[in-house]
Amino acid sequence: MRSLSDLIRLAGEREMDLHEAILAADSEATGVPSEQIFELISSRLKDMRRSAEEASCSNNPCRMVPKTGPLLRGYSKKGGMCGGFILKASAIALEVATYNASMGRIVAAPTAGSCGILPGMLFAWEEFYGKDAADKERKLTEALVVAGAVGEIIANRATLAGAEGGCQAECGAAAAMGSAALVYLQGGSCEAVSNAVALTLKSVLGLVCDPVGGLVESPCIKRNGLLVSVGILAADMALAGISSLIPADEVIDAMGQIGRSIPPSLRETSRGGLAVTPTAKALVKGLGANK
Amino acid sequence: MPVWDIIGPVMIGPSSSHTAGAVRIGRIVRLCWGGEVQNANIYMRGSFATTGEGHGTDRALLAGLLGYAPDDPEVRDGRELAQRSGMKFNFYEEDLEGAHPNSVRIEIWNDGGRRMDATAASLGGGAVSLQKLDGFEVDVSCLLPVIIIMNRDVHGVVGAVTTYLSSHGINIATMKLHRDSRGGLATMVLELDSNESAVVPEEMKTVHDAIVRVISIPGVAL
Image (cartoon, rainbow over all chains, first blue to last red):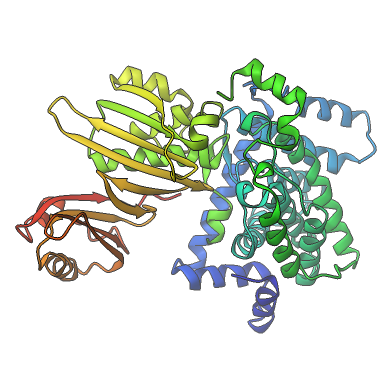
């Protein structure tokens, strides 16, 4: 799969649901039957759910960043301006990203550094909007297939590696994938899915990867917790009928081009940006993490 | 890259390249060695050397050398597991011009005097490449089953090997040939389409007198 517009056209021509068209395309490309791909993604969803559950009760510390999920969970009980759905998605994302940093078992989606975003968006949707959905697990698996296809197209047209494209290619891509999944779950059209991807990615273009001490902690963990909100709002905008002036495939191309022009010091080398601030240097010295 | 590689792998964090990729490298090197690893010198290069410790790259490589998979929670205790198993290991940093930025060279030997030297790189997302084996370029991802054949560089070896595979109904996906000099030592690196018709290395070794060694690595999925 190389383009969202081709994928949507394929779904239209074959009169298939979006997730069926994706399974058909991947099946034709790999020789693996559609049902088997669906089963694989279904097992990934189970692993993702397990990682979110383990993360919510894990006490394993990270090297630098203190626990943040419980603070947001406690705060959201008292209200909060964003509303319960976004706060819940953010709390899950923070917890899963923290669990990853402390060597917990997670599903890289699309990468380990961005692994909190999809579970945050999907499982918060399940709690707030999916409770009464018929065959909820199947629906969530289909949404994960849609998210995977968006990631596949980003990988093929641009990149999913922070070292090649900065954080826009990791957390940014994850938020775009989650945004597409939410539009799908809410029954939006294929065009709305595509618009949600474009709107999300456009708002993260240029985001650099500058982790303190080379660790997947700062700013990665909080960025997982923050970018869920961009993906959720983009999904709502797309469902409201707002479209992106620049189509998703072209936004992805722009993301790839921008990624290539980000200097290497801001592409996962920890030689620039936040990683070289006085506080970061002091933290790293304290850890002895960067020999 | 199909959807299941995008939503995946399932792995122990924190880094698909520095943790999951490192476990896969260890596993692949163990498969090349073909048994328990008794002694290992591990030379970290590039960012494996600079940020490896914070990512658990050392523990991940050792867990892989012990045969663990990237999603096994025991990866966290790779050092302790290696010590308990009696493996002797040392970590070094190696600065090499032109080396891949995320790579490692691993020397393995046993008390019987057998040695092996493997270099591998982590390419991102858990994907890796076994770059060199005993000085020879191999450059395979090990996602598909791989056969590495080392032989004296004489005519007819490629023909004998492909005839053997063909007679067992095995399709060759890719094939690479290298040699150190004309008439010297040569390697043949073959990626196969399926694990189903298993290749028996001992049997393959007999298809031509010039074959010195046959290494068979089953596909190691992401």
